[in-house]
Image 1 (cartoon, rainbow, N blue to C red):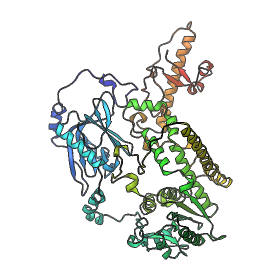
Image 2: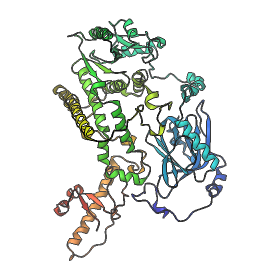
Image 3: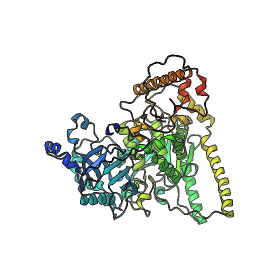
Image 4: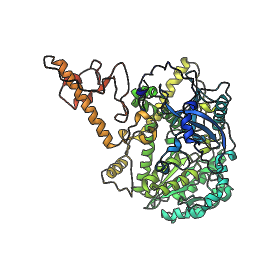
Length: 637
């Protein structure tokens, strides 16, 4: 019975609970093994990192299924991470540890990476937050990088359970002061190490020299200049201490509206065109102030738009793109497809996998972002126009679109050092609100377990009761939304002739990986990045995957189909002598996953089905292909 519960062997239905209960503690079972080891696995701490609490005899499940197999060890919590130290980790080969991450390991979870914490009480899963009156027998941690950890605390001492569970909840959910974040402790303790380390090739853009170097690298120093008017953040803490503006722009204009309404340089193309960004001016009601702002913007615009020599194309990302709340909601739906607790959840999701992906709208958002970046690339590369990105704070969508454009157009940004410098320039120095967007300080008014990722929470209002006026309001809203969606489609989804010509022309030529790179944005080309989103789901993996493994699985499937075809022929012609039964791996009610051949064929169901497209490619038997719907019932085989 235990032999059937190997890794990846979880089926769609839960196996019956074992009737035998052992009252022997795990440490008593493994006493001899521990005596041989004689020492515990050491906890590796970074400079400034402190151990807060720990619990021993914790079982980390290999896979959450009915057999409850796993590895025993210690669960510890520091002011930086949660770590599981397995009893057998000391036997790891040195070649394996050589390629490990030097900061966090496979069983490490940084505190900021924790998304949700659940506890299991009498086989019921509940969200954990605040002060607990009762402590769980199992702990489930969902991570922002889509990992899911299961820890069994049934064999752990009660006092240790209280300490470790309370410690993890407190240090991942309680509000924090900025100076209490681990990075400050690390920076203080690692000063000597950082000073002694070789010079990092990543450009930090924290000095005037770094910006001058970037201007010279991109040949943008002819039209633009680096300024230090915000040195010491004396004008605005939203802008970097040093940044680049058009040469004709007087520096006193930066002080006028605290950096708002100022075109800030991002990058220059080889043909002299440039990518700029601008934050919006404060919203005012007074007509006099509005007139002053209009005059100010007209003057700014004349410095960058001087036809026929300098032509600027503006892209208002705040008004002509998706709202940040819609992007947040779409990603929240999307990520739930990959936070799988057990095999049953995986197969239940797999049945309607593609419809769930589509309903999340995440792929459509990805496509819109890529398309907008390609449109801007066409303006810069083909039409030799400057592009000015507009956004309320120029620190969200501006960071994203600008980074995509530079990755597509600048081969330096596709190197490791160049990409790190790009993140530093556009996101760190660009003023992206990581503390607010990721809620690192846990200062949201709502309970932390209800928050969604990536963006700050917005207070939701309860919908009023339905009635005649409510129906009329719904009708009006639908009409308005319809017009809004139509506007988005006309301005964003219909490819203009010059854009289509530019896009098709590039894809018709051999790819130069040291030049311009354009992604494909057709619907079928936008796919799930399996190495990121599916790497933690055992059912979606195959050892040694790749083209060879794919072809092997396809051939295996075709052999099984041929075997089933022979059985069906024998039934249709009973007068012919029966041959020896051919082994068939699908006779135990298996369904091909949407992730096949990278998913296991272990789905048990009452109605086994197989796509008929496989049958059509193997023979001319039309009776099977003509059956109802697009599946063939093999339940009697």
